[in-house]
Length: 508
Image (tube, rainbow, N blue to C red; front, side, top):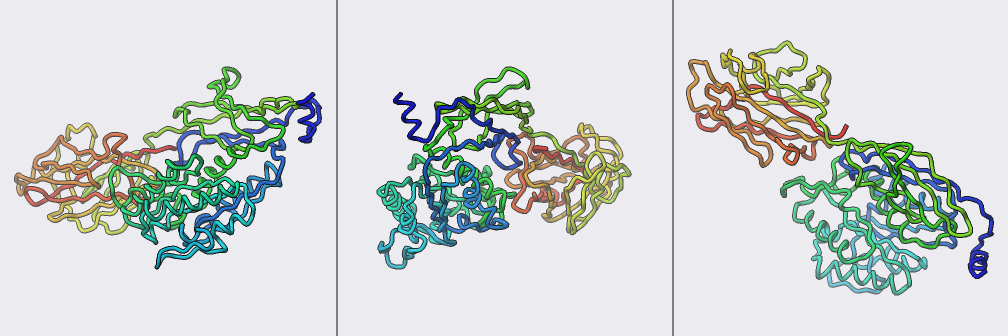
């Protein structure tokens, strides 16, 4: 009787109808985005009992900069998503472009001389005037990039002061991490990561933008800790795809902390590798979680999913949803491109005859169709090697490809334009043999990034060099979707690049 009375007070009747059956969709994450399979829940069951107010304070990304229009910004996507649970959720966005933690401090706070004052229209005091349940603090990184503030002595005290005020009001304080940036130096990009790690280490609940947007490279180069190429709007902000990822991260966190639910207790997602049987529980979601990332899905394996809603009494559990399926596309060899450098011509569709060119040359792949890749080779000279004996390299280069080369007596560059999100392996052959003017040594040195290989080309018939030989060392593209091969003469003062093979790897 006590339980029945409680549910009656909450607005429930003791009918024994089933909850509405939720829906489930599944798809792979796009290239360069988080790995695994993305499960998205849809449901019409009522979930909220009272009004909930969320206030966002932050800088330009929270304001919507970079999105094609305001509706595609992460905060507006959040606002549009939450009413699916109940119309009683109110999201207020008072973010302001260019601001950092000093502008978000409470009204009346006096910063050190020369530091910006709090803005009473965009700060924590303004946020608390809405009597919020949750305050999202989206401080993207202006403190570091434009302010140059010290993390430990200047930025962290601001975070703690804002958190204290929010929690004293009875609201929940949820900071976001910083966001990676492209248009600043490696010291500041590293500091952005350090501040992101501070947020992750010192707050029980936070929204992680940084790790889902950042491009990490093995060394501190101009690309390390920049934004993922296909997510950039400019050097600071993110495009619609980037805002979509930020929205998904924000929604996952916000949904998990809202616990005022009715009717639905939780959702159960089950998975199998066959469509009809063998289903086991994969995870459970709270009534406000709509996105789940199945990181345990193995590449090139098809998985089947179904979902049901479990009820708070006196409702009955829903029926299982329609089964959906997908697979994680694994890293694969996507295409192969053959090069013939120099003056000779090979009349075979899959070979690319590359002479001296300061303009981009479009490349065919081994099937004789467009590869989407380009190459340019300015400032070289061509040379006839007179080579007629097939090599034993195992790459089956035709004699005509072996006979001529791009020649240089000073350092020159070959620029390859690839496809965003893909990685590469490059095999090169150089030779200067069977010609009366050729004498040893004839060393050629090739460099891509931090990887360097050299070859004695005098009378070479069998030796090649390989860049990106293993999956972990594949050649990555720079911010312009290119990689550059620097060709330098070694001993002997002349370098030779005769032919090669380029392998492209990635997800289909």
